[in-house]
Amino acid sequence: RFVLTYADRSALLSQEEVIGYDIEGNEYSDIIVDFSIDNVQSVLLTEHLASVYISDDLPLSILAGFQLGFPISGTFEQQEELLQPQDRYFENGEKIRNRQSGDVPDVSSIYFGITAGAAYDVYQNSGLTISPEIKFTYGLTDYVSSLDWKVSAFSAGITAKYNFPVAKPEVIKPADPPKPVLPEPPPPVEPVL
Image 1: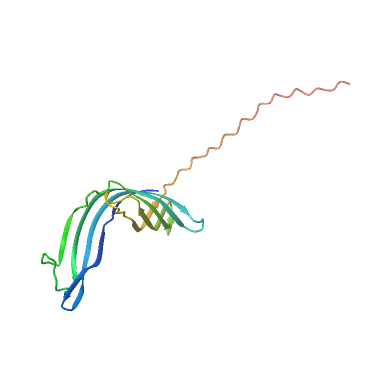
Image 2: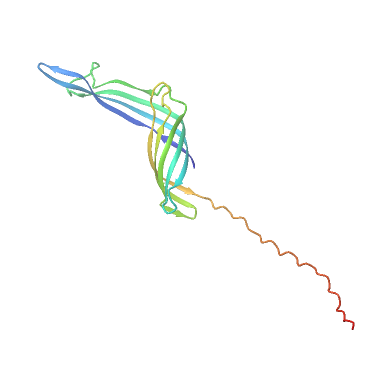
């Protein structure tokens, strides 16, 4: 099956880290900072999947294939926030430093990933099939061409499929062949004695 879709691959990445120690007299405490980057990414994707049913009695199918995508936009916001100690500030006099935002530089022009998943047909009637499905796509290309930064995605959704009925050709029974024309039998001959 072939699907064309718009995907929002945005993510907030955040990590707390001890960057040093606050020393007062004989006491010290950890200086904890939250590094965060909010990546907003939009991709136009084509998804190419094969679907194989496990058995004739079970409407469960395994999905396998790939995604090919074209990034539409990529922006980011990043910052470092001082979490502890609460009464301390960065050298700029604020709790936040290294605040930056803008377009993600060197965004790759193409996205490619391998997809696997499963679908379960919950409704089938007159060519219409409704199936919840789950899929995982493992990204093989880098999001930014200058970094080792791959994007993988887990997705869940409901798929509606409609199979258009195929008109069966009308079978025309051939006409019976004409009956053969037989010659008239000769008149009966009386035996001569």
